[in-house]
Image 1 (spheres, one colour):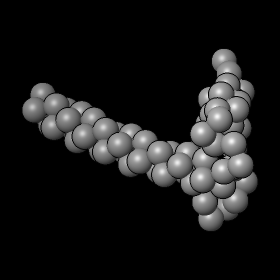
Image 2 (cartoon, helix red, strand yellow):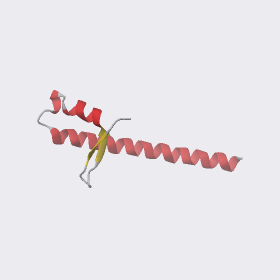
Image 3 (spheres, helix red, strand yellow):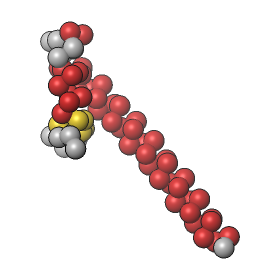
Length: 70
C-alpha cells in the first residue's frame, strides 16, 4: 500500500499517491508552477469523485431493483 499526499486547504482539498505527487512535481513542465499543478490535481480529483459517486449511485440503484425483482 502506498502513502498518500494531501492538500490541507479545507476549501480545495485533494489527495494523490505520494509516488504520483513526487513524479508530477519533478516534471520539468511543472517547475516553477506548483500552484498550477495543485489546481490540476484538484480538478482531476473532483472529476474522479464525481465519476465514483455516479458509479455508486448506479450500483445502488441496480442492487435495489435486483432485490425488488426477487
